[in-house]
Image (cartoon, rainbow, N blue to C red):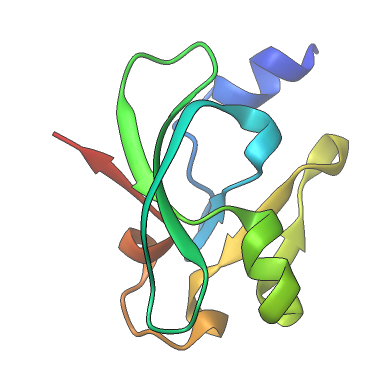
Amino acid sequence: MSRSRLKFRRKPGGSAGVAANDRRLKTDIRGYCTTRLGPPLYRYRYKDLPQVYEGVMAQDVGVMHLGAIKRLPYGYLAVDCAKLGLGLGMGMAMRRVA
């Protein structure tokens, strides 16, 4: 199975509050603010998907909150939102923008 097929067989988020937030899976990345715990928030598209999302990048989160990072297949990174301690669940790490 190709990496592209693996990435988008289902929506970009993971399960149980884990979101695929690896910078390498995204395009059209634009930062616009920071969270109260430090990681910047971005607006972006997942490669090969038209929808715009907003959220954090796993690489940014890993600098300050290494315990919130999970490794996905093919070495991609995900953010475990519960470990960020913001109480915002999946919407904190990744949210589709209407």
